[in-house]
Length: 210
Image 1 (tube, rainbow, N blue to C red):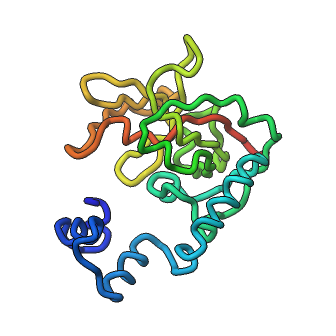
Image 2 (cartoon, rainbow, N blue to C red):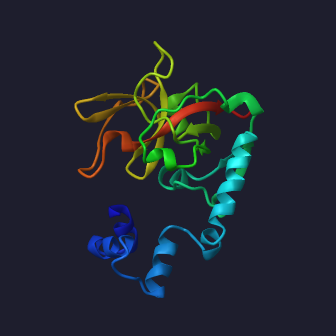
């Protein structure tokens, strides 16, 4: 709600009243919220059908490639937000384990993003410029997925998405790059957030295109 307030300019009490069905918004206010979320009315009307289609595509290992902002903040992937599809062997997702909060389990699980050339060097040679990374948004725990091996995550730093190894200590996330030329970063959650809220998901696959 605080993010929506910043995006729209509405006060949090005003939005709270609307979200709890205590007040209604004008059409102009609804238009402002839609614009802030990059939504159109077409994204809202067929929501159930779009969600079913997305689930079917995920079962067939067709993963939507989206912007970093969509991967970070949007629980459901709008058709208009899909840039392309990452197609994988049908068995590639079936064995992936989930470990996340009850709230995050309501999000669409798998998305993919491209890593721009200026973000890739910190994780070189594992991640190359314009690599596609598959994000499992149902694994946000810092518990090791495989014993003895560090997890690789998509993490929110401000409004940016970074790919890093992550540790948790003293209520902070410790973001570790693979390339020693780049600094380790400490990230502290806002007062209304948990540290795990900053983790978008575990990186399940990296596709470095030639």
